[in-house]
Figure (cartoon, rainbow, N blue to C red):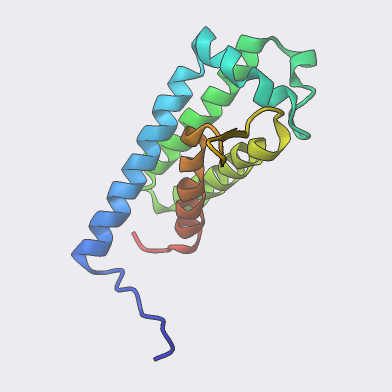
Length: 149
């Protein structure tokens, strides 16, 4: 063996971990998606959205709350795709692609938004909340590859 191991996708431990991750990701997306409908979150994401090379123009088309509502709607739809993929396996691919796109864009905000990084006691730090997206991106990639019900 060269340091790799085979994953037993039929084991109870694997299935439990998979479904905990799936419902956890859905809960996070649902919760954050709902929060996007508040004026507090709409204002909080404005600097991220307006400084990004893919989304800088959206506030010229729609207002702050409308943009936030649209993003929230997308997050809620992906959460629902994840939840319904438990019963309808064909939805997994769409949920996974949505997760990958959302979390790649969200993580790229770390590099496109001025002032996101600060140095505290000599250590570079950011809003640690956004770092959860690294794990969620990985899970999206796993779902895309995983064809198990």
